[in-house]
Amino acid sequence: MKTITTSQKLICGIALLGTTLLISCGTNRKVKVAELPKAKTIEILAVNDMHAAIDNFPRLAFMADSLRNIYPNLLLISGGDNQTGNPANDQYPEKGIPIIELMNAVKFDMSAVGNHEFDSRLVGFANITHKAKFDFLSANIDLPKTPDFRIKPYVIIKSPNGLRTAFVSFLDINDNGIPDTHPDNAKGFGFKDPFQIAKEYLFLKDSCDVFVMVNHLGFENDVKLANQLPANSVDVMIGGHSHTKVEKDQIHNGIMITQAERKLKYATLIKLRVGPEGKVGREMQLLTVGKKGNSRADIQTMVDAYNNNPALTETIAIAEDDFSNYEEIGFLMTDAIRFASGTDLAFINPGGVRISTLAKGPVRTKDVYEMDPFGNEIVLFNLTGHEMRNLFLSAFLLDDHLPIYPSGMTMRYMLNPDGKLKDVELLTTDGKPFDMDKTYSVVMNDYMASVYKYNQNDPGQGLFRPSAETTIEYLKGLKTIPSYRGVTRVEMVK
Image 1: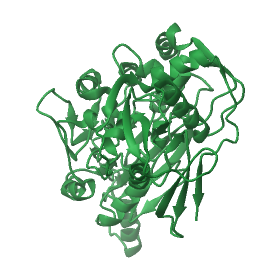
Image 2: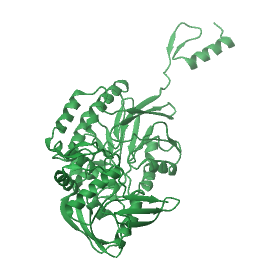
Image 3: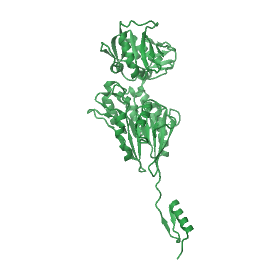
Image 4: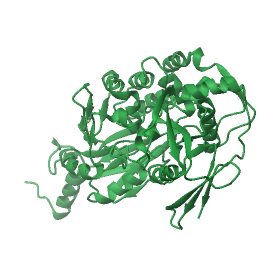
């Protein structure tokens, strides 16, 4: 009989712990030992706030396909606001469908519901959810009884490697109790506080290997939510809404938060590794998408077809100078609706101006629809100076501390040292104080008319003229757009 010494026992013990194949001590017989559990991985390519940037889709498609060759379990996810911002999509006969068809072709797995998903109106939004071959998610909205919406609060995806990943989504709700959209677009929906509802879905952490929130709350609100939840209760928050460019790891209360700016300039590659003990390792990398680089030819063909719309490329005027910021473009837009309507004054909310630059030279129909993509109607009011002051004071908080753009007047916003608004002074174009008791004719878009709550007597009258089409007709008559370089109509004073 062969005797095993202490040193031999130690060698055999090391072999048992360190190898997957044991050579039996004292015999030549090989005995198989079960393999140790291995880590499992899942990868996510995340974008947000695409705003119908269809021209970048051929590049995104190539990147997604290339990454799928490397990471076979890759998921492609949107953080919401797929819609609004490109006339080829927004003015399409079936509004909003081009971006959905492209997302189908590139094989998105899911999308958060963003506030601009509502821009297609009730029936249009419902249609989009049925045309999409991916899931729409939002856990803090109650759906209308009709029409039928395909929106889920959460989904659980089981990867081929057996990994179970739960995804849930929460949508930002403004002070009026709805997302940032025209109130008519949200009729029939109910909305709940995302910060309260989020706690009800923490059970997903215990029922899956990985727990991801795909939120349309904005970066600061994602941080706020992360700090209100138990530490490490969520593995990743994929964000949207604030157009924040997150370039490196942002860990708050043990939760990773990402966001990739807007309009498919970037995408975030998120790598998750689940160890045998269940611990989740995380890393993220911001990738440049844009238009340059290799692209998918079939997706380019689709994009070219959507862009082939002569009505959008018609030159309607010539700009004498470059427009270099939102204010200059906002002043042009307010001038257009004021002169076209023949009123004393015109106002546009800062969120109603969607581009910040416009090159000198030919201005096309498409450019106006990019400035003003919402299809809002012009509404006429008769307001006193006191009522307008009430409007400006009320709007400041709702518009994230940004001023309204005026035509026919100037304004001075008086701020406290902490940035809160103390008062607004109304001035004529030559700097003289307004007659506050006088009544003025004012036009604004029906979003402002519906959302801003302030004391006024006139309920307003719709003019049945969309603001974008009114601007187009104004510019056609103007032919040459004068320079707005350096024009200032609003002063912010601390």
